[in-house]
Amino acid sequence: MAQWIAWLVPAALLAGALGSQHLGGLHPCEMCYWQRYPHWAAIALAGFSFFAVGARRPLVILAALAIALSGAIGVFHAGVELGWWEGLTTCASTATGGSPADLLNSIMNTPLVRCDQVQFAFFGISMAGWNALISLTTAGAVAWLTLRRR
View 1 (cartoon, rainbow, N blue to C red):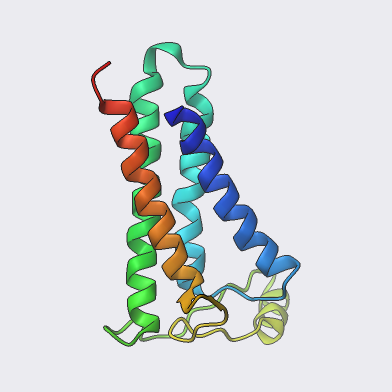
View 2 (view 1 turned 135 degrees about the vertical axis):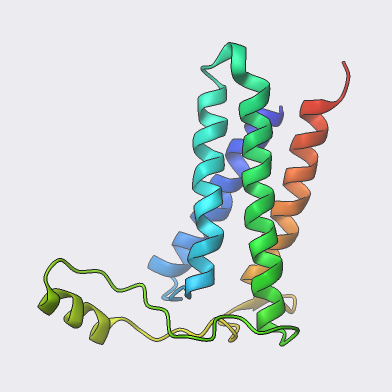
């Protein structure tokens, strides 16, 4: 059960994030991307756990830690959005390109998204806040299910 939770919840959170970006037109800020990376790792670790019989438990625990890391980044990001502490103090860009001309073109066409501005909230909680709540709860549940005595 823990394996499935450790695989499905990050996949659902990433699907929501990518859907809001590509279908909903919400452009992620730099800290939004930071929250995604641990979820990708959790999906890989939990996925490997289905095939690695001898290392199943450690891989699921590592997936839980990755999910918790995303949740911790979500707490930090939500705190920046709420003005509790300062976030990035320099400009960050998600622009990519091969040649200098391609990079410049990408920078000029990439929307400027501030990490301290909430683009979307549901029940008064930003997407970073929801990621924090769901990820930390999931990480705790996965760890408990994996580590409990049978």
